[in-house]
Amino acid sequence: MKDDEIFHRLTEISAGGISGRGPSLLCTDGLWTAALDIIRAARNTAVITGFFIASADAPETDGPSGSVVLARALMRAGIETDIWTDARCLGVLSICAESISFPADRVRNVSDGIGRAKQPGLLIYVERLGRAADGAYYDMRGKDVSKVTAPLDEYALNGASRVIGIGDGGNEAGMGNYMERLCVMMPDYAMCLSSVRADVCIPVDVSNWGAYALSAALSRDCGVWLGQTQAEEAAMLEAMASAGAVDGTSKKNALSVDGFDMSKQLEIVSSLRSLF
Image (tube, rainbow, N blue to C red; front, side, top):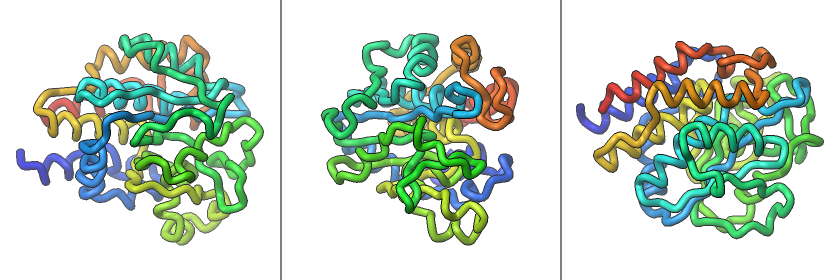
């Protein structure tokens, strides 16, 4: 299969519109190559994630597993990589990482020293809120969740690093690239959209799937599969659930992500792996 066919399939698998949300409609095949160009030039990276669901008093399942898989893929490709999050999401993220043997000492809470942590050359945001035009952070229901959201998007705003964003709702760091178009597509949600831009932002149906697809693209680049197995995907979901994480859509502690159950997650992994 040629590269352009691979990238088109990555778009179909991760941003085919199955979620019914508007942002994934803006995904194009060229975003994968643009992201790879940035990754190829990186020597060190921080993958930043963690979405705390205030109404459930728990982090959500979308973000951690995608970040862990992507961070491990970057490490396997020879790029020094840490995962950054905040205090509220650290426990779930750490357990998720441990479930597939990602080094625990590379999962860090940077919320206590925002703006002071040494920045790597590349930041990759996966399902991490970005501030709206009014400076606040909003969930998908339009509720202001600034009180439970550490402003980790600040690292994307100081110009010290290249930035890649992966999001699925329009309120994530990096999705500011599409703010004008999303305001037209989602007029009732316009005031809640992220204004934080990235060098490249990949809009998908579920943010984990975007991170998995980017790991698959990197696998193509390296000539060896760098992603997870189906068994590892199941292990991560089970680990997150055991740590109290919730589905961001249902707000329930379940083996699901954004309303899609375990079988769908395994299908996504299988579809990506089959490309290689």
